[in-house]
Each structure stands twice: as structure tokens, then as C-alpha cells.
Image (cartoon, rainbow, N blue to C red; front, side):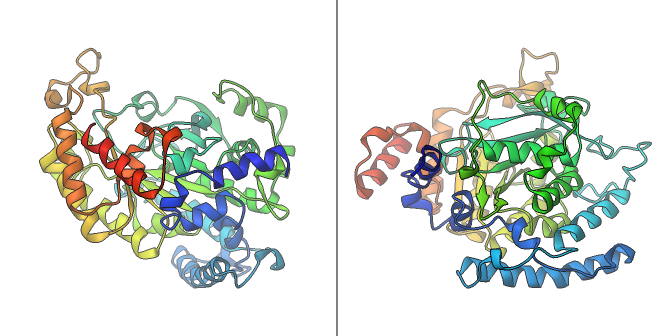
Length: 446
């Protein structure tokens, strides 16, 4: 076994998989190159050769037909009934169709639930996201701060887009979520190149995030299509100027080596796709993402619409976000839900969110996050401070967090391993019983 293969296998042998592999079975197989990413499957699904001549309504009907074939093929791949390496790539494919649909949608943009219906191609009017068709990337790197199944041993390949469709007063990334001109403009080819470079450097997934990735769906879809169609050739076709552009915002502290051992399924670049999102998107967007994403990392912030509108200026939040979470569950997707505990909001937000998850998505992995800190409009020392949010000017108390942990446990939520893994002493892990006791002790003694 080569050194590079051994590095990848060390991810497969992480202690956490012993306890949660059955919750993330598809992602595990793709991240270790035992299975092909969904986009490589979608590239095998043919569509009408004249699809570009169809109306937008007919494009969606064509998509629904192709989706059925995709789901059938994906199921056979999961069950080891077929090897896609024996199936030629289709021309045109379901990926081409997805790209065309996003190009049509952006002319009356309804990627997110604001449904601004702005023609973003003209640049004369901007929607809530403040964007035209250009995508800007603030930074990308091997993120070692994500959940253990995502960061693994080599990091999560995180691509931070600018701008957002929400206005969270406490946003820790306000410098990029509020400033649409932050970062460097990137074409789909540059995005595809960044994703492939990161995977060649050993990341376990490409983490599309921001800001918020939803307004960038058109460019993300086209980048993924390029990866499927051209593979590593995407890098070769970059101009010197394009290559210099993407290196400007790479923020890893050192250079990683490239290795094909980390990046290929057969002869094709294999990149697990992760959607790291506030989940305030339309059902149409959800349907398109279903054939692109291998794992979901959704936020579930608020348990009521009043708080969502006051703190994040987002209407109909609970209706929209709960609907999208439920879709993920009904589709049988791999998912880790994030919920951030906010000070003073345990009763009206945290508990209702946890109750909804327990009732509607039993057994899913949940990260109950204690990382809230006052930022932006909630930071009294910031020039952006807004006294309207004075209850958010502190971190959550020990008593609040303990109450949340006790309540989550009473609901039977699957949260301990994901929420507490960074606080555990890995060097002294014992058998399964002692591990679970240690997790519970961490929760009780936080």
C-alpha cells in the first residue's frame, strides 16, 4: 500500500465510523472511493438530444423522467448490482439538463424562497442575495474545524462564496455574507479546478458554503458538469490568468501534495459533494441538488417565524426550512443537521427545533452547537452593534447548554457523538460501552 493510499485508508478507519457509518453509508463509500459520486451517476443518464429547444416547463418534465432513471441507477449502484464504469457517459446527460434549467431559472431567479424573480443576467436589478450571475469566492482551504466525519484526517474542502439570502444579526462571516464584492470572481471552470485540486490534495469532500451557496447554484451545477465531462483536463485548460486568480484566495497554511490515490474512481475524478446551507431554498432547487449532492449539512436555526424574521430578516422560515429537511429525510439522503444554541432562545427556538427533528427525522445525526458568540450586530464592541439584539450579546450559559443536552437526550436524539467528539480524549477510548459512557459524561460535565 502506498503512503497516499494509507493516508486515505486512515480516514476509513477513524473510530467514529464504528458508531455512525450506518447513518452516512453513501457518503462513506464515496469519500473513500469505494463508490462513485452522484454526479458521475447522473452523467450516465441520457436526456432528449434537443432539450435546449424545450420550454422551461418541458425541461422540468424531462428532468422528472430522467430523475426516475437516475434514482433507479443510483439504487443499483448502492446495492452493488451495477458498476457504472461499464456504462458510457451519456451525451447529453442529466447533468447537462440541470445546467440548462439553472440557466433558465436565473432569468427569473427562484433559487431561494424569496422568489425575487429578478433577471440576474442583466445586472440592472439585484435580488435579496445582491448578486448578478457572477460568483465570487472569498477563500477555500482544507477545513479542519468541521465535524469529524467531514474533516477526517485531511480536511473538508471548503469553498466560501460571498453574499447570502439571509441577514443573520449574529453572522460570524458577515464580512463575506454582507459584502457581495468580497473575494475573487470565479468561472465554473475555475470552481471545478478548485474542487479537483482540493480533492487531489486529499480532502474528503467539497463543502459548498458561504455566505450561502444557493444563489450560486447555476455556477456550481456547471462546475460539477465540467468535472464529470472533462475530469482533470479542467485544470489543463486553465489560462495562466485563471490559475493565478484561484491561487489568490487559497488560504491553507502550507502546500499539500497531489495524489491520484485520493481522487479517482476508476479513471474518473471522484469528488463527494456536500451542501452546507441555511436551507432557505425552493423545492425546485432541492430537486436539482438531489442528483448532485452526496451529503447534506443543513442549518436549522429557529423554531418559530417571529425570531427568524426579527434576527435574520427571513419570512416563513420554519415552514420552508422544515419542509426542506423533511425532503432530505424522505429521500433517504445522508445528513448531519446543525443547530446553534443561542442565548435566551432555548425555549422558543432550540426546544421546538429539537422536538421537530425527533418527530419528523428520527435517528438522524444532529450537531447541537455551543459555538455561538456575539458578532456583527450582536457585538457591543462592533460599529454594527444594534441594541435591538441585546439578549444575544453573550455566549449561552452552562445552565442553558445543560438544559438543551438533557432535553435532546430525553427526545432520543442522535447527537452525542457528533456534538461532543472534539471534547473527547481519543487516546483513551475503550470499548463501545465505555465510549458511550464517556460521551454521556462529557455532556453531563460540560
